[in-house]
Image (cartoon, rainbow, N blue to C red):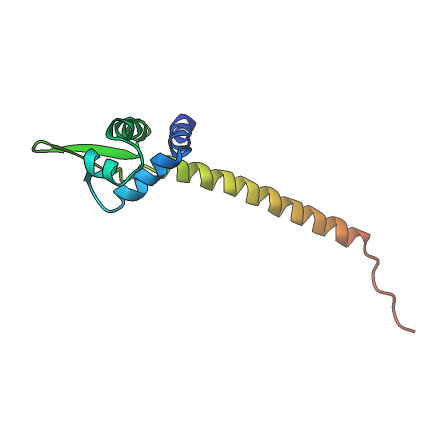
Length: 117
């Protein structure tokens, strides 16, 4: 996944209302009206948030009869997860290199123990 995709995911997740919508969608496919009933914003605002989440690849839309249902996209958070893992791996590698370097410096500074007479 590209950084642009991860950027879109993080941008979408930066809004607390969008994170709340994702939490509500964990229960399964839900129509926009039902989401709006459980949120402190109106249906038009929920629709706008759903559009952003959809454009970021976090949710999917399905039409069932006359109802439009929204659900979590199975791989929606994969870009964010991949970015976090790569970032964390880089940080851990830098930390391990520093610990290794510090250990080598510390060993060079130590004098061998003196022999007992």
